[in-house]
Image (cartoon, rainbow, N blue to C red; front, side, top):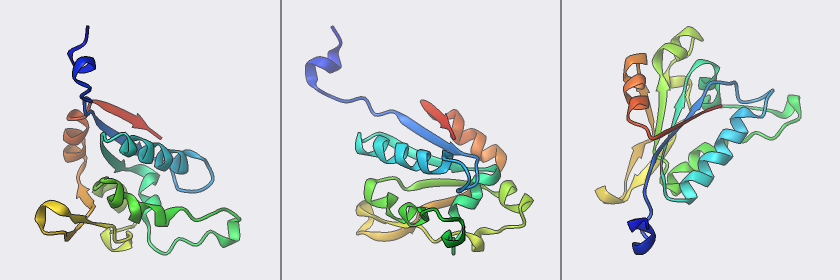
Length: 143
């Protein structure tokens, strides 16, 4: 019999949700966000990666009125409330699209271990740094 079943302990796994698609026009970005919230609700170690057109998901000033869909981008700002504080953005993907960190939303969380200091959730990483992050994960889901 499994020892964890006897103690009732839960194994925490590291989940990385890789976002490669633009935020609108497909369901991938919204589905990813919903799955992230589910994973966080089950107290897993949840991180997100944004590369390729996925970097557009974090752009500030999104306005979806003309395309007739709900703008879900403000939900990213609530991720810290679910202890999702690691959003990795690939620098090269930003640069290839003529974007910089200044084009991204400000997403922060309050660090309870550091007197509730507000800290940034977005971490710019290059491709090799992102590969290292991916290598540390137990589960990687790509959207």
